[in-house]
Length: 391
Image (tube, rainbow, N blue to C red; front, side, top):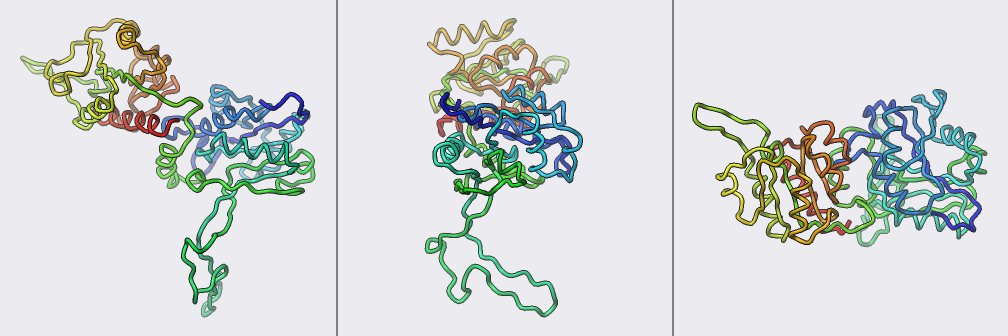
């Protein structure tokens, strides 16, 4: 948090209206396994730079998610919850109800690749270098042309000479707002300005400059977040991946004929488990039913397993004791109510898209694929990404 000697109260404020027309409840739609707003709230809180972190919303659902991720909630009035309401008007209303706040860091929920390190540097500009407003920009190397509005009108280049088109490496490009954040003093906001006074920009890395406006942005943003997003303070170290066989490795269905029970699983998931084993990650398979010997034979003799399990936590505790591990080093993929306790304890947890509601409510990575249909591969890729990027 801010230093005790600094009397100016700096609040992070995330505006999250429930009535988005482009993507309904966009701010809490899951992106890379977590609600969209969770990514910026984690960055703001982990930066330790703010005296308070707020979400301004008119939605009960968004309020619940915001509080779950550590933010305080300001319930905005209907008058500033309209399609035509500006960010400035919403922040002015927030400040009216919170006279203790001197500086607002308006962080956009739709910028999920924001990192604490960027926020720390911006706060230094405000607190220690005397700037009254700071906003985020990104550098683009794009050639601009004058818009043609009448037939026969000739366009002209606006930021380069077509006779001498610069190479990217020979041109500094131009700075554009990327919308990630706008820091402003109370005094400027009271005068109707988000940007003004002693003004500075903060240049963000292009890979961190992600903005989501329409559905088409979503898959691109998801890939960027998985590669460049901020996943928490501590480096991720996974030594053991535990997978519920029933509903994660399989699709949870049993096919019965007169003589046999049959199950199905994805060869992609089997390959993913082998990939983890090659990276020295132990794999544990756990089931409340019997585990098919043929299934185990198709996997690897390196996999540890236990069937007919009544208490999954007890089994994982025993495995951890044998391997000398803690829960922080465990990745757990589960799908049923009997997995909830382990999902909450594991350092990294995930659920298939068709998991039960209780499992999904554990703040786990939610796979796009269902059990037996690639969920393990997706979760394994997620685990490897976390370990390789040290996040």
